[in-house]
Each structure stands twice: as C-alpha cells, then as structure tokens.
Image (cartoon, rainbow over all chains, first blue to last red; front, side, top):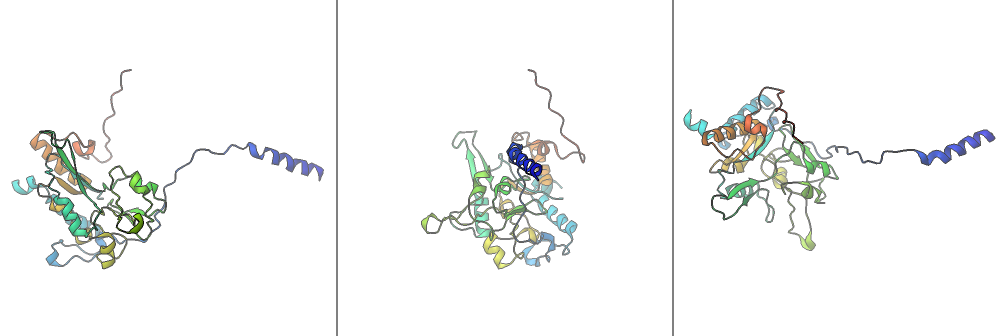
Length: 81
Length: 210
C-alpha cells in the first residue's frame, strides 16, 4: 500500500514534466450551414429566359450548356468562325 | 470539372462601371454594399492608367473560409465560394482575411450596426431553394441554375470581364493576348500557357546563383 502511494505521488510529481505540442495546428472547419442544391438539379428555365436546355440532374449536360455560354464571350471565335 | 473564376483584362477595361451596375441591378444589392467595384491604378497618368473589375475571386483555398469562426462558408461543386447568412454573425473576420476586400457589411442600421456579410455569389444564389424568393432576398439571383453566367461578365461591353470555368476563360484570354501581342504580364502560368497535358507541371525554376 505504501509503495503504491509512493508510486502515485512520484507520478504526480513528474506530471508537469510532459512535453505537449505548443504550436497551434490549424484544422479546416466543416461547413455548418444548410445544404444547397446544385445548379444542374433544377428544371431548365422557361424559353423566355434564354437559359439553354439540359436535363434535370444531368451535370454533363448542364456543363456543356454553360460552356457554350462561356465561349460566347469570345468575340474572335464568334466573328471569325 | 468546372472551377468558376473571373478574369479581368486590364487592356480592355474602360472603367465604365457597367459590371457594378449590372450586379447591383441583378441582385438588388442594398445601398452601401458593393459586391463588385472597378479599381483604377495610375489614375490620370497618360498611357499608364489601368482598370480592373474586382469582386470575390472564389479562391480555391479561400482565406475567408479558413478564418470564419462559425464555418458558414462552403464551396460548390463548380468551385464557387458561398456562405449561409443564417449562420453568419457579422464578425468581419472574413473582411480582414480577404485580399480583395470582397466581403461587404450593410451598415444601414442604428448604432453603427454591422449586418450579416454580403458578397459576390458568382450569381449562384445560396443555401436556399434555388430560384426561390428567400434565395433572392438573401443572396440575389441564381443565374447558374438558369444556365447563365454572372450578369457582370455577360453585361461587360468590351468583354474585359470574363466569367466561367477557369480553363475556358484562360483560353479566351490567351488567344487575345497572342492576337494583340501584349497584356499578358499579370496572370499566372496556367493562364499564360494553358492547362497542358493532364498532370503536367510547370518547369522548375532555375537555381539562383549565390
């Protein structure tokens, strides 16, 4: 019993000698907000809005449509083709 | 996979502020909040005056996202950085972290009240039902869900401001630079030389002589 107490006391004495990490390790936070729907998970807009056409949920189809829209910003291609 | 970016061609920007107006109008942004603005350097110096249109650059490693104490930022599958206004506490950390001054805070209330942060959404709305009234009121129009690009880029009269997938707009910009023979100094390797073969890396820098 006495030995056990001495051992616990000794452990208590060296408890402050531990070397813990002093440098703050940054951890990327995780988004806490509400989920958002993705752009291609929408019905295609009505024709008057001229938003193009894609199938709901078809990402490749939506990306193709938006890429065409991006290329329309390229006047060299628009003029010379 | 698309990574949505803006690219402003300083050789073309004529400081008309059409992009600023288009953004204000499209998203009905309140007074005192400027999601987009035109910055001019060497103002008035003949031949040296350059303007670029600046908004949120939708960084691939966004500092606003890193510093937000309530983690209200997220990145969409297209690389657009958005945030949840229901979670934002208006602390302003993102404003200090952002190198472009993109986060804006409405200050219309009494006692110098700082409201919830507002910034460019790449016309992609926010975490509400797409194209809903709630989404429009909080975040503005969701043009991406309509198959369109941001209003600022599509409205630009000289097509100085390009918006869309980083690789596509970089290709457009590079072709312009090659055609006119100048104005390539500002932007990085990928923009200047293209994406190259998949997995290709830029050549190593030559060792410096000590």
